[in-house]
Image (cartoon, rainbow, N blue to C red; front, side):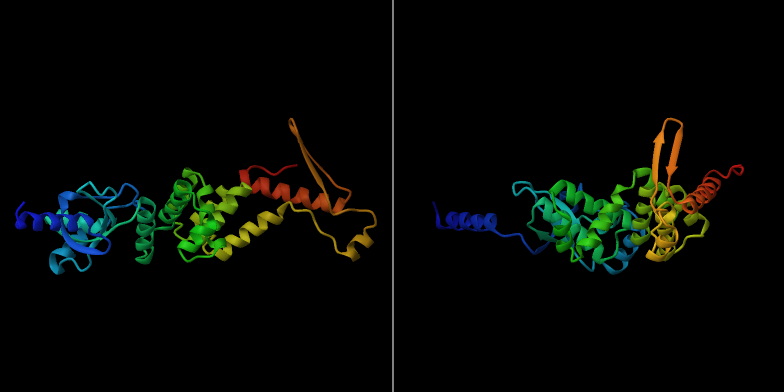
Length: 284
């Protein structure tokens, strides 16, 4: 073998062994594909405006890609999918890319981080992305909180939003709820069976802030809670108790209590809530 062949062979070996992590190079668009697990749901939103910007100012920041299979010449996008679509719209043949050498789990996590840092994810997209990480890669709430620099309680509450059904999430979106904290309160209302009323108040503007939502949920929590008597009240009422028991039988709901005053209060609240719920005639 000639010295030239040996030299070419050694260069090829070096190239094959090259670490791609952090490398920046231009890659042909035909070799780049969007990720199958992109946290953004509206992938092409704003692409037209971005294409105009790229046409006028060029690409200011490379897109981030990865090779999940070393033997494959194609790349998957980690971050910058809108820039990719904009470049295609401009008929670019190649685009500058930063290459990461990461596995699927780490790739998806980085995509979420990139979008969160740019504030590109809606609360709905963030919840779906975190839920995907938890279910697909078996992260605990604490591990996710640590990965994203959040508290465990924050992450647990955020993931709790996924308890809402698809129809409930769609209804929240249609009602214009774009706050994570309001969505967390919607979950509380759903668990109490008052989701429809909660949403109605949001839609009419009667419930606008997280404070309003918390007040609504607190009111519903205490609506049928046992009345706790302080020592002086207990003494004045003798053997009367602040406790009650509710039982449901076929065609019948019974509420039992030794406290007549409490029973009267419960009856009043039931009438009020039924009128509010069904907008029907008063109960005689």
